Amino acid sequence: MIKYKIQRMAFVRYTYPFLVNKIQTFFIFATFISILLFLSLFPSSVLQETNGQSLITNDSTTKNQISNIYDLRYSILVNFTSKIDQIHGHLNASLMNKFNGNETFAVAHAGHPIAEIYPIIEPQITKVNSSLSESLYLKLLSLPELVKNSTNEAYAIEIETTKSILKQVINEVIPSNFQNDTTFNIFVIVDLLDIAGSEYQEAITNNTITAMVEYQDSNAFIQVAQKLLSNILLSNNSTLNVQNSNFTHLFVLLDSTIQKVSDPKQVHSSIVNIFLDLSKAIELDLHTLLSKLGTVAD
Image 1: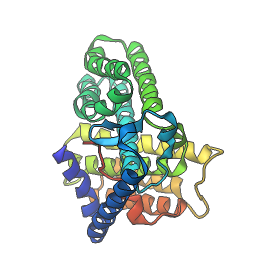
Image 2 (image 1 turned 180 degrees about the vertical axis):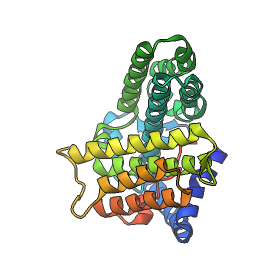
Image 3 (image 1 turned 90 degrees about the vertical axis):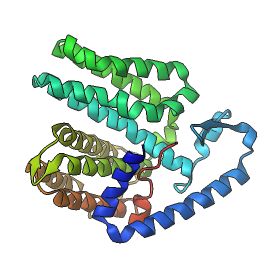
Image 4 (image 1 turned 45 degrees about the vertical axis):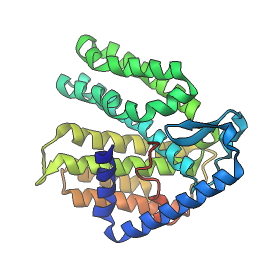
């Protein structure tokens, strides 16, 4: 986890060095204020601790009372959702490689969720539904072997079954009003794109792909982010201000830059352009838009 946080901060520092100190100061102050407000408003007797962070209460109505985007619990839920979407990205990449006959890469992508992501999200899932947490664990654990021992069609069914479990997890952990909230999902998109930038930087050396799995991770996370944004744009409940926005063009440019195996600086520049457009569309300053990066419940 320490390595993960350093990598995530490295992207912001590399891309926007003049913002780092401001972002850190802003977020630390906002976190401190939100914790003080939270402690003053909610009695400790109704809280359940999720891996050290107060997220869910015994009163189901309180689940929907996290309305302030500066609340630390809000940031944790954003990043939990991003982790689930990262699993979707890994599953998609694994299935793509399976159908393309690249079993080694398919196994590698199938193994990432159980090795890298499940240990982070497990405490939050277990607190609300331990049997669901166990089901997800067993399913993720089985995927690498299923790559080797299943037909393409059978493996595709297993992937869909896994995604159904992930949907149950989201419904258990994330309040429904957040799942459908434009701003919340924009924060998730930002997190996914930031990780994609970090993965790409790890994958490329001198305009050559030196780590194919990480390169494919970058592509997969961007595709998940783009799909999420498309869903927002198609939603009747979206509050996104699309006037003067250029999302489709910016994602096309980002995809083109990655397919050309361009210098990571160019990929980072493309991602930042999307950040700027998203910032305008939800009418939040860039500092706030980037404030959720790397916040985890540990």
